[in-house]
Length: 66
Image (cartoon, rainbow, N blue to C red; front, side, top):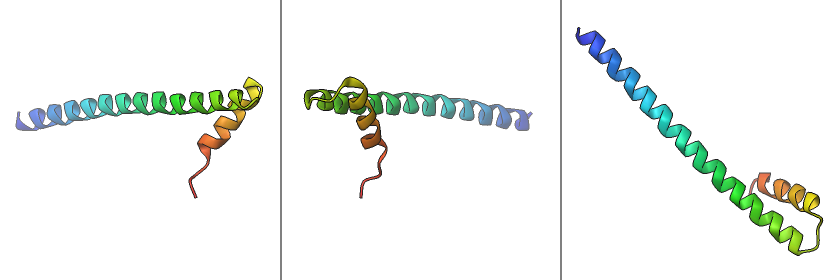
């Protein structure tokens, strides 16, 4: 019986951890999309066509800082 309780606790803990990590991933994706949108807007204001502004924003967003 004790092993069953331990197993159930472990499963519950893993499920809760999975749910928390999914939420964190959603937050990260929303943050990333927000930054890309800001860079696209900057490019459009600088005179780039929307497609080129998005392309440059994606390139800028995927570079590692030096």
